[in-house]
Image (cartoon, rainbow, N blue to C red; front, side, top):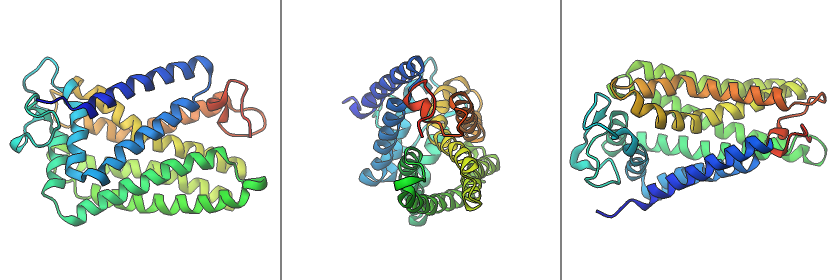
Length: 293
């Protein structure tokens, strides 16, 4: 069986990313870590549009197969799928995270509407993920004011579309036991509330011309987006093998806690690097000297 070199490349990228995080912590500058994370997010998400949802999901499941199968042949949180089509590992692994099996089946055998909602969510979220960082580094004053305002509106529209798609998709999870049933539905709705709520608060603040509050809420929004995408996936990577004796336990944990954890981390960094000028969190990316607004 040919090795899935794409998966191995992802593992290599994760090792590099961890190295950038350690380097960022030592130097007090995380911009390389952030840029690498954005690029890796785009690579993973663009795969859905190039390869189609079922194949992209099989690749995604393949990332988790290795750790989830360490030291065991079976567990309540592992399941098989027809013809072992839900992974890119061929017959090397026949047990997969049960949420992954359900995820693959729902978009292999689901309606076109469901798939289009997934594409809408992934595509719009990818745009938001990029634009929110452009907004972060180009504050809305001086020569950048008009562009910042325009991009802010575009970002909010894309976020709204993405959130609506996610809410509709989550509403269909009630009968998916491997997701956690209704608890996963409410959890994803809570995640959407964390992300969209921070964005709404930021919009309301700038409409009141409160730039400081706007900046604070946008930092929290960025944290929620990192939480919903990257912390979600990293937590699942770690907790899957640990909680594989309880079906849906790992998935439900990350659904409920990833976005709030992202907000918490963003808030801690904001407070750590904020100067007395009420700037933003650029210090966390540019260096220990504080904000450079």
